[in-house]
Amino acid sequence: MTKEFPKGFLWGAAASAQQLEGASSEAKKAKTVWDYWYAKEPDKFYQKRGPEHTSNFYYRYKEDIVLMKNVGFNSFRTSISWARLIPDGKKVNKEAVSFYRDLFERLNKEGIKPIANLFHFDMPLRLHKIGGWENKEVLEEFYYYAKVAFETFGDLVFDWVTFNEPIVPIEMGYLNDKHLPGIWDMERAMQAGFNTMVAHKKAVKAFKEANIEGGKIGIILNLTPSYPKGENVEDIRAAEIADAFFNKSFLDPAVLGRYPRVIRDVLKTEGIKVNYSQEELDLIKNYKVDFLGVNYYQPRRVQKGDSKSNFKQGFEKYFRSYKWPKAKMNPHRGWEIYEKGIYDIAINLRDCYSNIPWFVAENGMGVEGEEKFIKNGMVMDDYRIEFMSEHLTWLHKAIQEGSNCFGYHVWTFIDNWSWLNEYKNRYGLYRVDLLNQKRTIKKSGRWFYNLATTNKLIE
Ligand code: BG6
Image (cartoon, rainbow, N blue to C red; front, side):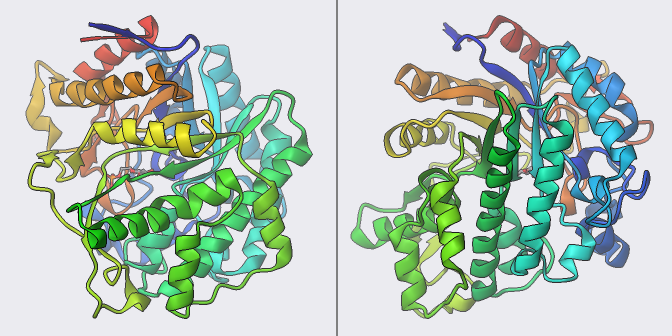
């Protein structure tokens, strides 16, 4: 069966500055939290490999753009490094400007639409030291950074994103120890989360002020549809609360300009206070996004909470995760694979979010030990082809039913470094040999080329 996608559909991949560029302390780039953390605690990082061990895109981007062409991309999203562009928060780094301008120019020339993101987990160290998103001054710095980015690259990039997965540094840094500051504190998590949303709104305001002709601004959220364990009231309520905190907490203010009632009720019951001003509420109300990017990897399965749990340190009081017995698992990564989740997201956006234009900004399959699938020099990743194909089948169905999806980006185009996980889970359409940086197309790369260049999924 052939499934044709809408004309002009975007096919490509996502990446991020810290994960791809390398040159982490070169060309006047200032340190980020990741550079700092690695220097301080290398043991936390898988195989002790820190952010300087990436795929060196900073030096290899010209050749890498050719590789993008060879897998049929017509679009590519990456982030600008805040610490590279404005190392001291004031003066714009000319070397960074040349690098990003050349990158965007070359992408445009090759017919690969650049989508630029402002923030992908890489807080400049000097701002982390004054409290990161908890400090309202950092929001002003972000506004300035956004303005500089729009003014400097607005003639080359028309599709902009403020944040990738803004909830991740909050969840992993304030209710876990996988990002800095690495603490368990719900009150601080809520304040940092709220401030992140205000920072996003300030960037949207800066974007409107920059008046980029034909420009659009969005945000990328990792949505995890929440499914209750049972059909009983308690499990259904648990799923509603999980959905509110993990999806709607960013989706609703970004798209609808308000926070869901459920969140306000829970925080009130728990006596958790968030500091905000009327001016901030007005920003939230008035600066809505033009489009949305959705990263989808896996759903959330929940059951009723444990009333004895302490809400100050986590959500278990209101919902707990459980393993669905029928779940299909990624045997090489441990995450659930639930393709229909993408359809449920698409229909929800159609019905509850004014059918906002959106694209799949990340979808992909991480595989540990992928070298065991190499045959005659090529990774034979049929599992990844099946993964993308099944997600695309559900996505196509949702588009047929009217969801306003305009593209599909895979995570990611070449294997890349991933935070504490280093290269543990490989996701690329190209394999990267860490000894010599050689890129080799995988079977999925060949498959993606046909998909993208015909605009058709052939099963
Ligand atoms: C996404 C992030 O959520 O997941 C990426 O945007 C990240 O930055 C990707 O690399 C894969 O995560 P992991 O932990 O499997 O490498």
